[in-house]
Image 1 (tube, rainbow, N blue to C red):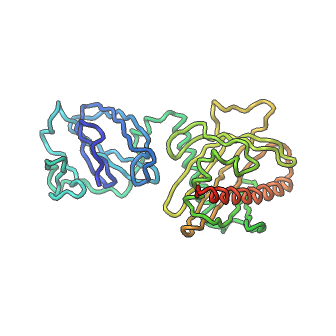
Image 2 (image 1 turned 90 degrees about the vertical axis):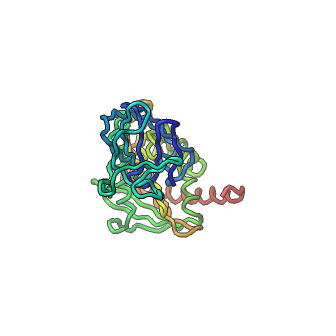
Image 3 (image 1 turned 180 degrees about the horizontal axis):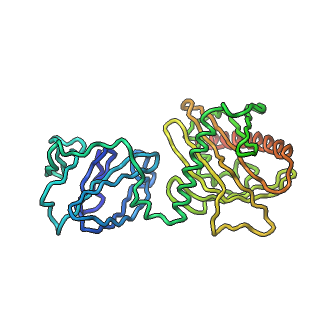
Length: 346
């Protein structure tokens, strides 16, 4: 169903139907798109605001394609209007969704003819990110978005199958696998969890509560937000055996789907969190976690570790430490989940 106008003037509708609307506006217009916070992904922008300046040529229809959230496609068809009335010639656009009259757009109780049917533009099956939205991002934000897409694709490859992974062991219900990636050993741990995927995701993300169930994490906070799917996270780990405390600055990209959730991270730089003298800064290669739906009360938790702890640490020590840390963390996570259940919070 079309959303109500977001601005009293000019006319503006958005929906997830291709080629949907016409905007009557001056030659340059600043739009502030808003939706309620907490909107699900069937809505657009999920509460984000985009102020966009659109320089429009006279009567030149401009199709703007938005790729937002989980690759949901939204379209605007925009034309300039002189003064305050309707254009003096029709611009071909498709019928408004659920319009009772072919090739008409309905606004209120009025029907606007939009051109003969044969002039309608084809419905595009492909979409590309809007260059207008790209211009609203800073150079650094664009870099973060590009890095985020790259690490997300790598995490999807890591977690899509076990074909390239070597089975290592099973301990306390956790299955460990490893592989060599870009010359170094990385780990993947999998465990079936006794709660729904969405419930587990809400515990894991955004991660501010991680120190409550991960004994190796003393701090995990989002320090910079690019958009609803991309942010910069600063985390600190405690000393574990021969491994002293480390801090990390990571770019995080998330993806939500009906049957899984995924959080992908990779080391990045952030000016407000420089490396500190006397503190070892670790670096994460592409890593993260994926929560896969099994049924309403079960999910699969996949955790990929790809961490350079820095310092002179033998691989055997790192392997032994990782396996012990992961097993202990899963145990603490189960205890945290049971505590939430006993409190009626799950």
